[in-house]
Image (cartoon, rainbow, N blue to C red; front, side, top):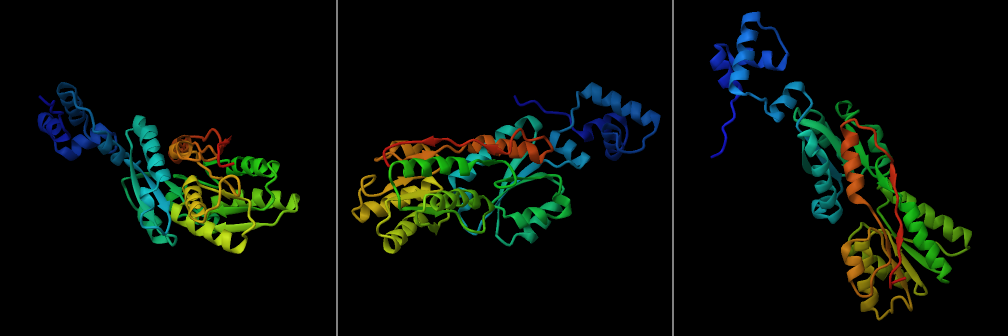
Length: 319
């Protein structure tokens, strides 16, 4: 049989006081006579009363949940594997705090959404993904000090190191016409891979060929078609996500382009499918769970151990 836990009303009834008085005594948040205080404490002890963690956090004004706010213009972004992995990791990291996680998509123009969150009494903190630099500098006052970012300026993967290692490998393998399928230009975390790619191509006096994507296979297919049309002599395509790289491989296969003989391909994330597909995808690691857990704890005020989490290359058949 399920155990019935005594509530605030039960304590008040046994103590002979109002629920409001019992609440003030048990929370230590307001006046009560010595007699009422003694009666309430005695009743709570007799009934084995324990305040519900949600009610306790609401009474303290510290909120009951962390909102993982994902800024993107795609309606289905919350189904993205990165988002689902990050959400699960946050839930596990926050469980010892008796705090839940809720998931919310906000649009690129998200000022009104953030104001709504700032006014939410149940909100403990926000973890924001998909931001740009300007957004972090103009958060509502109610979110400052309790917002952490995933991406540039917050907990993030060292994508420049991971992508840079793959690009260096491609160059060492005599690939001299490398194209990059980058992330969207509005996203702050898209900049480091583009920067390391541009630095390498300029230093090696190679052509710079950048096409923008959005971390989906559909964009990868479109990007590969654009690369083949604009630069048919391309001998390698580096992508900043494995999903994008899978789309690239589909287009290359449809066009009769051999991988890696004609065109080498690399991704980023090292998703499980990357090693299982044929040919297996060369990529770089992305510790999503560690990043998300660190961001969740940072949003609650804990010091983040590191800002950039390492990424290491994983060389397979496509490169």
